[in-house]
Length: 571
Ligand code: GLU
Image 1 (spheres, rainbow, N blue to C red):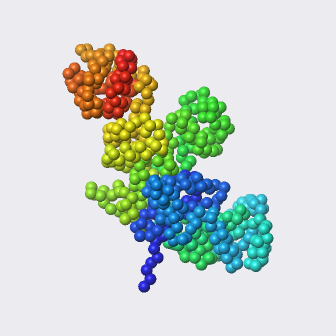
Image 2: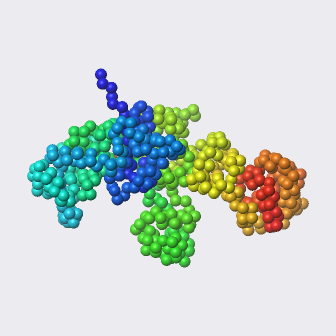
Image 3: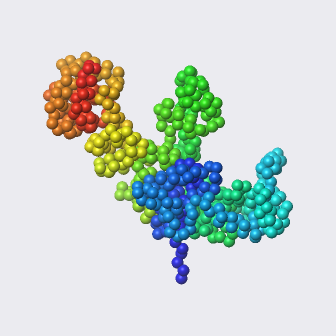
């Protein structure tokens, strides 16, 4: 009896940008399935498009995968938190396609030898002219096999190929029906004659995606190809190539696409869409915002801004400039965006697990189990539970997952996460605030934060010097300078009394400070808010801050007293 080969899955990103959240979902499912089946998860970098690929982007993708906890058993090596991920235990590398060109060339040659591939020498102008004729005749253009017929034998084709004349290689598509067996969508039949003679090696000598993917899935022993449904129409080409090369056909599972809540497809362009809308609204409100004025404000050339407004371009640098100048948040699309916004990796992996998959398990309250960790996923992931219908990206749900994780986290763990996040995105925070200060903030704020950056944003009062924060004039007028209510002390009296009370307070902890404010309010028959609000404005300049005891304790006694003096001077 032979046992089934071990499951080997792969994630095969093209390093042309950051890791898209949809790519992270693909990687997570491939990883989880390999784990569940006791198999292997491979990372392969598909960099045959030399003009668009970069090593920097490959590194960024690996970094984001490692951050999410999606670790590959084999693939390029990457050091994360001092540990090396990847390697080549089965000796099937290298894992960058650009380093496998010799291998593709062997198989390409074989296809030419057996008459299933041929060189084509037409220039792009000639092909374009043929395409135009087809379009004018209202016919679908497909390559007419002229080059195949022009050189009748494999031996002559090889000779011409080796002569150094620029050419592409085309696949001689099969004329029979093809069946793509898909574990999610069932068998997909492609009628005979549907496929064209697509290019398998470009004029630059690099294979096309279709060819490289087929050779790699075979030579790396990939048993299960799980990828998004957008690749579904590529798969017949892959199956046809596998048959021509006498390769296995791996099991396919195409996963549902990810859509925004408004049913548009989630894509990088969403950032430009939001920025464009912001600009349009701003222009409507303010007629002085001409394209020229906007160009100056955004530091972007005017024609590009005009094109951006007319949706002629979706330039990310323009969208980012709009976000900066108009103080808006662009929608997070890539893992790096979510990371920068302060999401926890566990919230993201939990949330994306549910994009087109569900465990089919009830939780204690009888509802569908939705909250689980990556360990649960790796023990329960099943291809049969991948859905067929489009998944919706519900940002509110993601934020609530993140908020719950933050709320449940120990103070020590939260501070650790906060420090790691700050070190990367807000280094001034860890320079200014000690561990004690961060712990007080984290403990007080964790029940009400969605993402790590919320804690930092609320802590902004502690990041400015005692003489540098500005007073909100409306708050000063309404609270500090206002005439006291009948029989009540003025803000000046309250602040002066509190200053002397705080000065003699030995234990400057949040609880002791709160107790002092409380007993002072009681002794004067005041509500807590009557004392807290002037205090808050005096020491932060604004009406918003974390709970007062924490705010003062984070500042410490000397700063609090110095700030109180500034507040008193405003009364
Ligand atoms: N390199 C392809 C991409 O990034 C993935 C191909 C595949 O999974 O087969 O879209």
